[in-house]
Figure 1 (cartoon, rainbow over the protein chains, first blue to last red):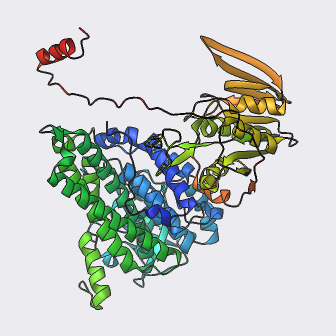
Figure 2: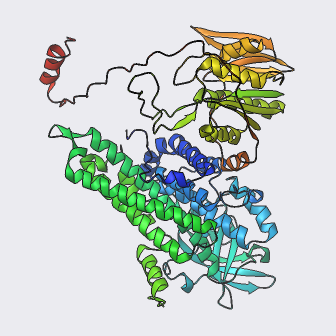
Figure 3: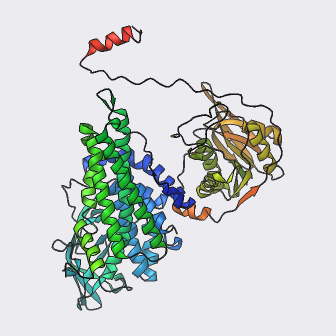
Length: 391
Length: 246
């Protein structure tokens, strides 16, 4: 009903991209158009995860595209990764989340902090979609203050016992392996690989979401789960482990949100040109033009932020604070664009015939997860003043 | 086996089509180009499937300028091993056929593929001309092919049914829908494509045998008028008095 998507590049930012980036974007755009757009409203409506898309996401190379080829990645640069996330989120934030979690929150920590045996065991299988992963950091009582986590891992003979619970975990109920962060006896955060089927480990689903309805969410519950030593990621101790993964995922979100915004803007622009009131297209009215002009202005600014962040990432100069600024700005931008786009469509804006209301509901999660909008502001505040507002 | 796939570029199906003021040339300003879908989805993918089954190499050949290198890279990302680009903005289909024939001659390709037609000018002429220039059999509008021991069985769609043709290689085939299914290049393929050879060769001289005099476009479609479904009288009145169909 909403017609064929046309991308918008008001400042010719495509000129800043390489042939690889453009090819990757075209490939993922084709895949989303064929595999996601025709089904996503239905799955979202039924609050069901289109799990069959994992295989397709793997086939196009959406899982860990910037990881090395020998470990199941695509060998692309960080802009390539961002562009893939953008195109996936143009389809649906939940589908982008499936790829973000698998690539940035599961494959990345195993690649970065895992032993060679862990890498060989898990990365190719995760990259090919034959295994699904999830990432457990947030707890029921600790969201914005993950360092206060209560999940613990203690020595028990020649192994360990993991105890505690994690909440709001994307893909948890269907994951084959979970990357879990817990505190050891010296209060240091360590990463643990927990496989489905391990005694004492369960993953109840969280139901009743009005957002990311096509993405499956759950808890991770550990009741004295026995953990062998070789299930612990040997390469990191402390909060920098999970935070480095979040940086990677947040970077992808800064790009992804633009995709949702572009889909809403494109829908609103085309609708406003076709919809007539008072014998003329509503696109001709000043208040509609104000909305559309401000939307493309904000999208263009976000595109430039994302591109620059990507060049910094490729050069190894990107900081977590820069990622916070970009994620915060671009997700709010997308949410505002979605709200304005919904206004332009009037009553039709709330209907499932158009993607806007779904994006709008999804973005309420995106502005909250991977660091809330307010926390990212305080990270920027800390970075520019040197004074932490929350410690 | 050695396979050659001829790929052409054309305006994206979403591109706005216009012509120069004198209506003699297509206006390329601001137009995005894609690989001809019949070349990409059916010809190239069937060649990749054949390679997966029988081994060998796939070369793609394109007649065009460096602006189309992205399209060639896409073909390499889908599975071709190497590419040849004849460095010329071709004047017509005959020009394309002569340039590709010059590349293919003496290369002993087992199968040469084209799409059944380009989706812009729809001439469906390059495959047949290429076959004549290379003195090879030509099977057009192929929608299915099996191949074993140097012999192919090719199914062609004809009016009201199918025609099955048996022939030994080498031959030229034009691919239509059904010969294969579209494959979307994956990220690894896109990155590997950068390392595959893209050889640029200069064109041979071709005399123009026909020239396009003028293009014309259909009259613009009139605006669609929406009628309130509750107001059937208005609909009947308009159908009778304005459209004059009842």
